[in-house]
Image (cartoon, rainbow, N blue to C red; front, side, top):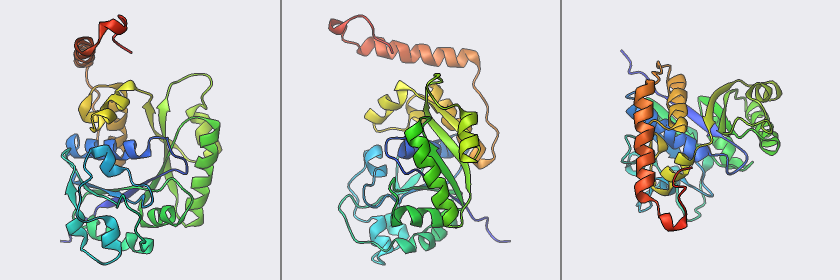
Length: 272
C-alpha cells in the first residue's frame, strides 16, 4: 500500500502587514500540537523572508535558495522550530534563485509530512507565482478593510490566471466594528468563502515579542482559539472549544502575569 502523500497549503497576500507569516506559523503550531500532524513550513518569501525571524532562529548553514540552486538536498535545509514543526528558511541575504524548482522541492516534502505550509511573497512577482503553482490548496490572508480587499481581489485573480482556485479567505485582525467590511460582504465581493476569522488580539503582539506562536504563548486567547479552529478546518479534524471555567482560569492567569510585570509608576492600568 502506498504511503499517504501530504498536502501543500499556500497562504498568499499581495499586501504586507496582514499577518500572513504569523498565520502560517500559528496554523503550523496548532496542526502539530493540537492535531498531531507532521508539519513543515517553507519560507518562499525569497526577497524578504520572515519565518526564521519570527521564530528567533537565524543561524542556518543551508537555505531554500541553496536547495533550488541544486547546491544541497532539501533534507539538509530542514530545521526544528522548537514548537513542534520543522521549517525551511530562506536566505536573509539576496541570492539569485530558480523559483521554478519550488514545486518539485515541496513534492519531496509531501512524502514525509502531513502538511507543507508555504509562506509566500507579499509582492506581485515571480516568487508569488512560484508559491501559487507549488500549492495544492490556496488561502488568501486579508484584513477587513478596503485597501486590503483591493489587493485580495488581485491575489485571487492572479491565482485564477495561474490555473489555481482559491479555496478560502482568512480574515485577520478583526475588531468586529462597523467601519470594517463584514465577512459576508468579503465573501460576496471576492467570490471566495471566509474559512477563518482571527480576532485582533494584543496577545499576538506579546507572543511576537517573545518569538513564539500565540497558540503556545497564550493557548486560550481569542486569537489562539481562532487559529486552532482554523487548523481543525484545514485538516478536517474536529475542533473542541474549551469550557468556560478553563477559559476563565486561563485569562485570570494572564491578567495576574500582567499585574506582576506592570510598572505602577506609569499608572494603574496594567491590563489592555
